[in-house]
Every structure is written in C-alpha cells, then in structure tokens.
Image (cartoon, rainbow over all chains, first blue to last red; front, side, top):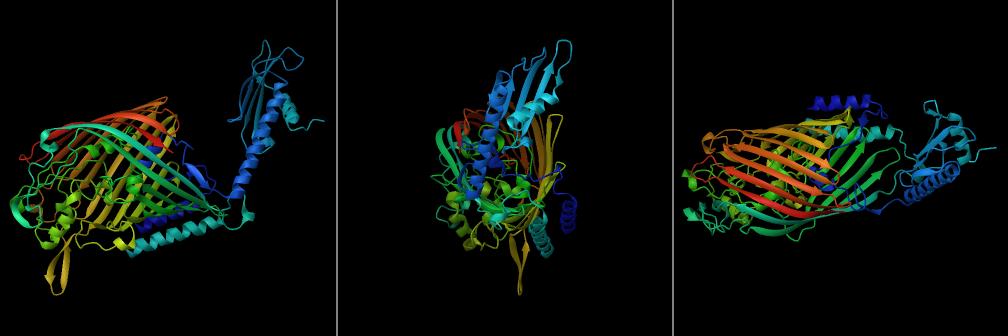
Length: 156
Length: 471
C-alpha cells in the first residue's frame, strides 16, 4: 500500500502543473450529485454566497463592468457598419447579417465573441467574412484589424 | 498500520508543501498570505407523496412471525412474542426530506485550496437511513496540484468513486433511492439456538460499510448485539443492547457506518484516470469524542481501507466512465478465548468486498451496469452459525435518456446474500420546470425471496411522486 502511494506521489510530482491532461476534478458525494443535477436556484453549482472577500468582490465587479464596456463598444462600432442579426450581452456574442460594408460589390458578415473580463484586445475574438459573387467565403484580416482599431480607438 | 499513518501523513505534508512551490495564477498576492474564504449556503427540500403496496405477510401492523428468546420486557424467554410494530402499514403517505449545506472555500497565495463542508439534516424527524444524526456529513479538505485530502465524517473513496446503474438514475433515485423507506422487511426472528436464521438481504448496490455494515433484515440487531458470537441474544449485556435499540429495529440505518471519521486521498484526473483511498480507524467513530467508546462487539469494523480506481473520458462525443472500488477491514466482534490473561479472538470474518461498473453516454442516452461481491465478509467464522456460506453478490443495469427538460431512467438491481434473493426494478421521469425545481414520478417493484422456505416470499411496489427544490 505504501509503495502504491509513493508511486502515485512521484508520478504526480513528475507531471507539470500546467499539463492540460491533469485535471483537479475530484469525486463527489453521489447523493448530493443526484440532488444537484438539476442545478440550484441561485447558481448551478453551489448555492447562495453568504460571505466573500471584499477585494475579490470589487475586482469581480470591476471586471464585469469592463466586460460590459467591451461588449457595448463592440456593439456600437459594428452596428454602424452592418445590421445586427444576433446579440447577447450575457454570452458576449454579436453577429451581423450579410451586407455591403464597404464601397465594393462584396458582401461582409462580422462575428464577435467577448471571451474575457477586461477591456483588452486579447479578450475579443472578431471574424470578418467576405463573399463575392464567384468566389468562396474568405476571412478579411485587414478589415478585422480595422474594426478592432475602431473599437479600441487606436485609429489615427 | 503505522506504515499507513506514515504514508498518509507524508502525502498530506507533501500536498501542502508542494503547493507552496507552484506558482499560482492567483492575482492577490499583495493582500497577504491568505484571502478571506468564501462561504456558500445551499440545500434541498424533497416533498414526496407515496403509495405503497406489499403482500400481506410483511405489511401487517404487527409482525407475524416474531418469536424470539427476547420478550417484550427484555427478559430471555425462549418462544415468547416480541410483539413489535411493523414499519409503514398505511398505503398512502406524505413525507419531506430536507438538508442544508455550508461550503467554506479558501485559497492561499500559492494556490493551495482548503475548506470545510457541512451537510445538516433539516428534517422535522429523524429518517430511517441515518437514524438520529443531525448532520449527514462534515469534513475539512485540502487541495493542490497533488490531489485532494478529506478528513472527517464523510463518504469514503469506494462510495464516491463507484459507477453503476444508480449513478444516472433520475426521479427519486431509482434502485438506490427513496423507495426503500416505504417497504417492510421480512419479519421472522430467531427463536433461540434451534431457530432458523433471520433472512438478511442486500437491498442497495453498495459495499458493506455503505449498507449499514452487513446485509439487512428486519431483525438486524442480532448482528449488532450478538456479543459473544453464539448466534443468540441471551446474556444481560446482549439483552440490554437489544432493548436499547429495539425501537429502531425496523429502521434501515444504511448510513450508520459510511460517515465514520476517516481520511481520504484522491489523485487528480490524469488522462482520465484517477485513484483514491480512504482509511477509517473504527466505523464506530461516527462523530464527537463523546461517542468514541464502543462495545467490544458492536458490529463495528476496524482499520477499514477503501480504495478506488476510475476512468472518465469523452471520445468523439461518447462519454465513458468506469470504476473498480473495494474495501477491506477487520471485524471488531471478538469473544474471550481465555481468562488469564484474557485473550480475545474475532468470531467474524474480515471485511473484503469489491465492485466494478461502467457507464457509456451518447446522444443523451446513458447505459451502464455494475457487479459487486461481498465474498464472505463478516460471516460467522463458526460456519454452522451462518444459514449457509454462499457469498453476497449483486448486479445492476439500467439506462437513462435526456430529452430537453425531460429525463427518463430505468434501473434493475439483483442481489443474493446467503441465498436470500432480492430484486428491484425502478423507472422514473423527472421534468426540469426551472432552475432548481424538478417534479418527478417514479415506480419501483420489488421482490424478496428468502432461502428459508418457512418464510414466505414477498413482493410489492412503491409509487413516488413529488418535487425537488434545490437552492
């Protein structure tokens, strides 16, 4: 038994902390798991948070605010370029219809997903599709960069 | 055993110490060594309406065949009438189960997580599964890259890691769920040393410590109170034990051992594989230090090692989970074999049981099953005192289907213990009305087939309808 534990211990030490194949997921009480499978009224996992670190709360609120700002700014920017088809602030999704966004004969469609909580370029995934009459749909990288610059006010 | 303690202590220290060396993503290092933990409150209320039907032999208000060497006043009197009340004698009932949970979680600046979990029973009466306890479980834990430690009164590795058909049961829990609270167990008792034995059954797909310590029959006190291992309750101490607990005789008490104080360790999931182990010094240690003392023979089990290995993975949208779990321990039941100096010898076999199972999930459909074997765990060593020596075994199989907010499940459980057979089929439907609110309906049929031909077979069914509110 002791040998088995030591083998496990050394095996774990040998793994890197950031290894995606090592997951800190542990077995739960099967009875509670059964009762919780339909989710909880106040949250999916735990319940009502009674006490929480104030700094944590403040930071969390700040991040949420920034996320809202990023979504709103993105919405405001691309709604001036193309008509919005779908938008959901909670999931951070904004999708436009196909339309003529530039003074050319091509059709464009923009997809945006807000992936992070801070007002940062790394937290937005923006894709612009371009479709011309006789060509396949392709991604327009240049237009993507242009829109990102508009959102983050870096256009000169 | 010192080796086990040493190894567990070593792992616990390594768990804590190693976490100090792992650079965490945590971004509040300027706040000090630790943050204020988060406290979360949760709970559930399960309102249950029931209709149960059971053949007469086991559903009379008074038990039919209860004749024992213990009479109603507690004196030894072979052949006297115990006159014990049966359990549920009404067909229709309404009940409510409730609990409140407190979950405290903290994390230090190096990523070491720690906390505590308490689940309080919030019922207006005690329940038949956990007797008089006011808390179902309470434990503390520490968690890092090296795995998770749990110390306290909670379930062990064999129970938490198992996979079987009850794992995905819907509604009221199916073959391992609520329905057992509404049926009566075979009611014959022993009549001194010449009697036939009380039929004992495996009623849920669990290993012995999660089954109250042994197979279950109406008169389980013969197991717990037979202090000298002669198969008869007749000494003053045995009678005292029997009468102290007589009112609880009909309760199932499956949970009386599973939450004994223990230490558990679980590895992280590595490529879907996970290992776990628990150590329980004495299943009689179920809470505060005021209850540490136990009888020399209280039916407890010492030095219980639970172990488990599981595999969980999703391949091309098909979810697979499998596990092998087991437990080993020593029977505490001992009797004196000499007077000077006094020596004691266990009169029951050691605990050694295992189970294995697997589930597959695809397109909302889950199918799975399991097999379990208690071997001759905790049988009388004196073979003639056992009705027979056939091992305790069981199997489960079932399926569940999720269709939007509607969930269906079906499960089957078959068991055999010393040739006493038990079978249960359960089907249930639940519907997710909203977050945390779920009405359900469940139908379960069951059948007892005792090996002893002087005891009648019995069967019946239980219909449960209710709603679960989870917050």
